[in-house]
Amino acid sequence: MTVGIILAAGLGSRYRTLTGRNKLTDPVPDGWHRHGVPVILASIKALAANVRKITIVVTPDNTELITLLSQTDGTILHIQTDGLGTSLARAVANSPSDQGWLIALGDMPFIQEDTIAQIVGGLTPSTIVAPFCQGRRGHPVGFGADFRQQLLALTGDTGAKSILKATPPRLIQTDDVGTITDIDAVMNLSM
Image (cartoon, rainbow, N blue to C red; front, top):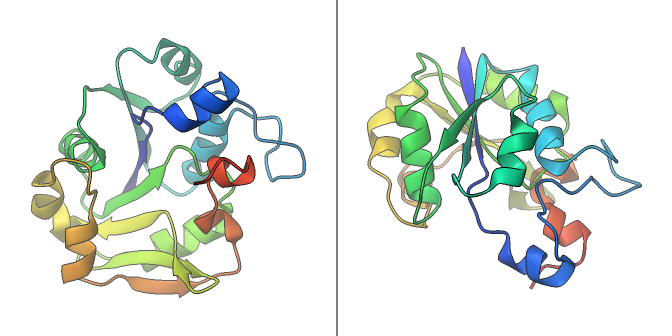
């Protein structure tokens, strides 16, 4: 089965500067799906029903987040990282899969479980699958097992953009705005 990877090792500095809080441990605001649940736990819940296991990438100094994550069944991968690419490569190295990986961002708690089921259901070892909503490619993105070596080679902060440019994903049309909405946008902190 597919392994879920949640990237949660970012600093969240814009959110922390403006609110004084950790965006991943703050509750989902009222009026949104999963309101009241901490953002990271809402993000995990969306993936949990559709993947074999979940690996959450965090920095070792984010003790508030690590404490919250200790209540979950996910594997916590503590790493110092220089960006999304490095985090993703380390998570894939620590999460073997014969089907592939569903890569999600920890600050996107609004994604519907049926959207994730469609992405996972469309994934084969040789495909990349992503949601497409309101004219934009969203998250999470599924990478088939054949992309393992390319994912392991990622470094820095560019994430998997080079892989997606070389192999455009199969897009799944959806009206799930959670695939294109992060907590910064909801809290009007986007710049």
